[in-house]
Length: 416
Image: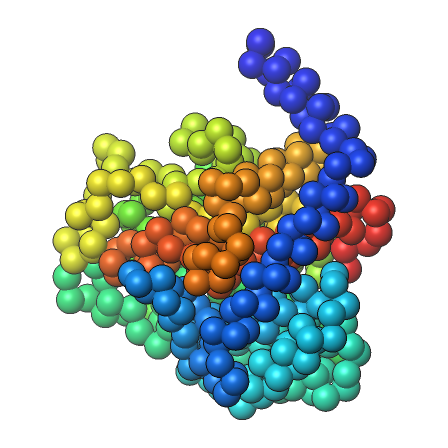
């Protein structure tokens, strides 16, 4: 009872802070810092704009990818988010140039991440400029993404294959929880063209994800594999989490963000209930640290959770934090707070706590360091022994998006 009363007082206190004169200054300072840091990265990234920033190596030097990597849209997207706040013509030019270099991806069909690649870049570009050319490219991107939908499974195929950590088993129709993030591109295409087939695919995929990825306690499974003849589930495993039955923190974040967005697009109460359940699991979990920045997996190193024999997770004894998961959740909670009738203050307060933690010296890099990324301490994939405790471009993107959404809430303006 005492703990309950304490939480009520805490949430009331944090709710008052939303209108504090210090909060707009907090947002402004972070965008000012981000603009300076990103301009330094623009110098590092070079002039050809075909190597897209992703992380840093052990020597703190920039690691970049080609356009076909799933992360390629986040740097252009971050530039657009910064331009939307700063109205800096130098940043706008860079955003236009980096976005333009992704244009060939509108016809790409080799994996499911076109939503990340194109909606984070071209989607923000269209939102800010209203360019018809950007809209056309987004619609074609949605057509390309739609080719991966299978009506038998009722899902968009994520990867072409998935090799289990438990031996040599290979699955040919894997669907990952991350795929929820790509549905916004389909909803957009349906809205601007009037073609309901895009929306049908998105809703069908979301319903099947809700059925087969979301557990009874609102934790999530990372990878669900399907039989394309029967449509049945053949496996529920993990690729980037600790164990098949654990809850990978960023996967839970993708789910929360994705189902919140799908509720915005459909107003279907089932999706709101799911989003609220996912949020409750995350923010009330006993293993969530006090600063609200999660460990990379909620169940890592715990009894009853065993990594696959081929997973590098079995070799890791450190509970690494994942700032990227916190940034995604902070952004999602800002949106969820405007839909939830009973928990609005709680969601917003928690999102603000996360933002303040991310912006603290514990996670925000000093200017001119960290390969000119904004945040430290993210995790790519411990099972693959890849990108452990490093900056990641998508952590920066969702940090900026969460700040943007918080800024709009402080001003009493709509988020969309």
